[in-house]
Length: 173
Image (cartoon, rainbow, N blue to C red; front, top):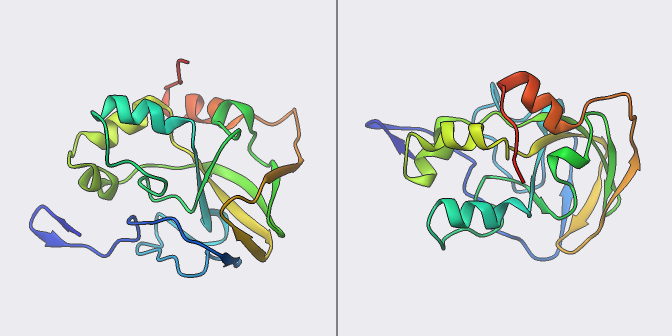
Protein backbone atom coordinates (compact mmCIF):
# COMPACT_ATOMS: atom_id res chain seq x y z
CA UNK A 1 0.00 0.00 0.00
CA UNK A 2 1.26 3.47 -0.89
CA UNK A 3 0.67 6.38 1.47
CA UNK A 4 2.16 9.85 1.12
CA UNK A 5 4.76 8.65 -1.35
CA UNK A 6 5.95 5.68 0.74
CA UNK A 7 5.14 2.02 0.49
CA UNK A 8 3.89 0.31 3.65
CA UNK A 9 3.23 -3.38 4.23
CA UNK A 10 -0.38 -4.03 5.17
CA UNK A 11 -2.77 -6.81 6.04
CA UNK A 12 -5.92 -4.71 5.67
CA UNK A 13 -6.98 -6.23 2.36
CA UNK A 14 -9.15 -9.21 3.28
CA UNK A 15 -11.56 -11.32 1.26
CA UNK A 16 -14.09 -13.88 2.51
CA UNK A 17 -12.71 -17.42 2.48
CA UNK A 18 -14.48 -20.70 1.89
CA UNK A 19 -13.89 -23.81 3.90
CA UNK A 20 -12.42 -24.12 7.35
CA UNK A 21 -9.56 -21.99 8.66
CA UNK A 22 -7.27 -22.50 11.62
CA UNK A 23 -7.46 -19.93 14.41
CA UNK A 24 -4.10 -19.93 16.17
CA UNK A 25 -2.92 -18.07 19.27
CA UNK A 26 -1.56 -15.18 17.23
CA UNK A 27 -3.68 -15.07 14.08
CA UNK A 28 -6.06 -16.70 11.67
CA UNK A 29 -4.16 -18.93 9.24
CA UNK A 30 -3.42 -17.07 6.04
CA UNK A 31 -3.84 -13.66 7.68
CA UNK A 32 -1.12 -11.04 7.52
CA UNK A 33 -0.52 -8.63 10.39
CA UNK A 34 2.00 -6.23 8.94
CA UNK A 35 2.60 -3.89 11.89
CA UNK A 36 2.73 -5.84 15.13
CA UNK A 37 3.14 -2.64 17.14
CA UNK A 38 -0.55 -1.85 16.57
CA UNK A 39 -2.17 -5.09 15.37
CA UNK A 40 -1.70 -8.68 16.34
CA UNK A 41 -0.09 -10.27 19.35
CA UNK A 42 -1.95 -12.29 21.93
CA UNK A 43 -4.52 -9.61 22.80
CA UNK A 44 -5.24 -8.59 19.20
CA UNK A 45 -4.92 -11.89 17.36
CA UNK A 46 -8.35 -11.69 15.69
CA UNK A 47 -10.44 -8.68 14.63
CA UNK A 48 -14.27 -8.93 14.59
CA UNK A 49 -16.45 -6.34 12.88
CA UNK A 50 -20.25 -6.30 13.31
CA UNK A 51 -22.10 -6.98 10.06
CA UNK A 52 -24.82 -4.56 11.17
CA UNK A 53 -22.47 -1.63 10.54
CA UNK A 54 -22.11 -2.30 6.82
CA UNK A 55 -25.46 -0.67 5.94
CA UNK A 56 -24.40 2.48 7.80
CA UNK A 57 -21.11 2.62 5.89
CA UNK A 58 -22.71 1.91 2.52
CA UNK A 59 -24.87 5.00 3.07
CA UNK A 60 -22.05 7.12 4.53
CA UNK A 61 -19.59 6.18 1.78
CA UNK A 62 -22.06 6.37 -1.06
CA UNK A 63 -22.83 2.81 -1.98
CA UNK A 64 -20.98 -0.19 -3.24
CA UNK A 65 -17.57 -1.64 -2.84
CA UNK A 66 -18.15 -2.79 0.70
CA UNK A 67 -18.09 -6.49 1.34
CA UNK A 68 -17.10 -8.48 4.40
CA UNK A 69 -13.45 -7.88 5.13
CA UNK A 70 -13.46 -4.26 3.94
CA UNK A 71 -12.41 -2.98 7.37
CA UNK A 72 -9.66 -5.57 7.63
CA UNK A 73 -11.62 -7.84 9.92
CA UNK A 74 -11.11 -11.58 10.25
CA UNK A 75 -14.74 -12.17 11.26
CA UNK A 76 -17.80 -10.26 10.08
CA UNK A 77 -20.52 -11.33 12.48
CA UNK A 78 -24.17 -10.56 13.21
CA UNK A 79 -25.58 -9.96 16.68
CA UNK A 80 -22.28 -8.95 18.29
CA UNK A 81 -22.55 -5.16 18.12
CA UNK A 82 -20.39 -3.14 20.52
CA UNK A 83 -23.28 -2.22 22.84
CA UNK A 84 -24.29 -5.89 23.21
CA UNK A 85 -20.92 -7.40 24.13
CA UNK A 86 -18.52 -6.75 26.98
CA UNK A 87 -14.80 -6.59 27.42
CA UNK A 88 -13.90 -10.08 28.64
CA UNK A 89 -16.82 -11.89 27.00
CA UNK A 90 -15.85 -15.38 25.90
CA UNK A 91 -17.07 -16.56 22.49
CA UNK A 92 -16.94 -19.80 20.55
CA UNK A 93 -16.52 -19.69 16.78
CA UNK A 94 -16.43 -23.18 15.33
CA UNK A 95 -14.33 -24.97 17.94
CA UNK A 96 -12.06 -21.98 18.68
CA UNK A 97 -12.63 -20.11 21.95
CA UNK A 98 -11.99 -16.37 21.90
CA UNK A 99 -12.18 -13.50 24.38
CA UNK A 100 -12.98 -9.84 23.67
CA UNK A 101 -10.06 -7.64 24.70
CA UNK A 102 -10.44 -4.11 23.34
CA UNK A 103 -11.94 -2.03 20.55
CA UNK A 104 -10.03 -1.47 17.37
CA UNK A 105 -8.04 1.71 17.08
CA UNK A 106 -8.15 2.78 13.41
CA UNK A 107 -4.93 3.54 11.56
CA UNK A 108 -3.95 5.47 8.45
CA UNK A 109 -4.08 2.31 6.34
CA UNK A 110 -7.86 2.14 6.78
CA UNK A 111 -8.08 5.75 5.57
CA UNK A 112 -5.90 4.97 2.61
CA UNK A 113 -8.02 1.95 1.71
CA UNK A 114 -11.21 4.04 2.00
CA UNK A 115 -9.64 6.68 -0.22
CA UNK A 116 -9.55 9.49 2.34
CA UNK A 117 -7.14 10.45 5.08
CA UNK A 118 -10.15 11.95 6.88
CA UNK A 119 -11.87 8.57 6.99
CA UNK A 120 -9.90 7.48 10.06
CA UNK A 121 -11.50 10.32 12.06
CA UNK A 122 -14.92 9.58 10.55
CA UNK A 123 -14.56 5.90 11.46
CA UNK A 124 -13.44 6.70 15.00
CA UNK A 125 -16.17 9.28 15.58
CA UNK A 126 -18.81 6.80 14.40
CA UNK A 127 -18.04 4.53 17.36
CA UNK A 128 -18.46 1.59 14.97
CA UNK A 129 -14.98 0.20 15.54
CA UNK A 130 -15.36 -3.53 16.07
CA UNK A 131 -13.01 -5.20 18.51
CA UNK A 132 -10.07 -7.48 19.01
CA UNK A 133 -10.11 -11.00 20.39
CA UNK A 134 -7.48 -13.12 22.10
CA UNK A 135 -7.49 -16.83 21.38
CA UNK A 136 -8.09 -18.90 24.52
CA UNK A 137 -8.35 -22.21 22.66
CA UNK A 138 -7.06 -22.72 19.14
CA UNK A 139 -9.40 -24.38 16.68
CA UNK A 140 -11.05 -24.17 13.30
CA UNK A 141 -13.94 -22.10 12.07
CA UNK A 142 -15.63 -21.36 8.78
CA UNK A 143 -18.06 -18.95 7.16
CA UNK A 144 -21.55 -19.59 8.48
CA UNK A 145 -20.47 -20.98 11.84
CA UNK A 146 -22.48 -19.53 14.69
CA UNK A 147 -20.54 -17.43 17.17
CA UNK A 148 -21.82 -18.34 20.60
CA UNK A 149 -21.28 -16.36 23.79
CA UNK A 150 -19.97 -18.73 26.47
CA UNK A 151 -19.44 -16.25 29.32
CA UNK A 152 -20.08 -12.60 30.13
CA UNK A 153 -19.52 -10.56 33.29
CA UNK A 154 -22.19 -7.84 33.68
CA UNK A 155 -19.80 -5.93 35.96
CA UNK A 156 -17.48 -5.28 33.01
CA UNK A 157 -18.13 -2.48 30.50
CA UNK A 158 -19.63 -3.08 27.11
CA UNK A 159 -17.28 -2.46 24.22
CA UNK A 160 -19.43 0.63 23.42
CA UNK A 161 -18.91 1.94 26.98
CA UNK A 162 -15.16 1.39 26.62
CA UNK A 163 -15.16 3.24 23.28
CA UNK A 164 -17.12 6.13 24.85
CA UNK A 165 -14.69 6.35 27.77
CA UNK A 166 -11.61 6.04 25.59
CA UNK A 167 -12.57 8.27 22.67
CA UNK A 168 -15.59 10.26 23.88
CA UNK A 169 -17.81 8.96 21.09
CA UNK A 170 -20.94 6.86 20.96
CA UNK A 171 -23.12 5.23 18.36
CA UNK A 172 -26.57 6.62 17.77
CA UNK A 173 -28.97 4.04 16.44
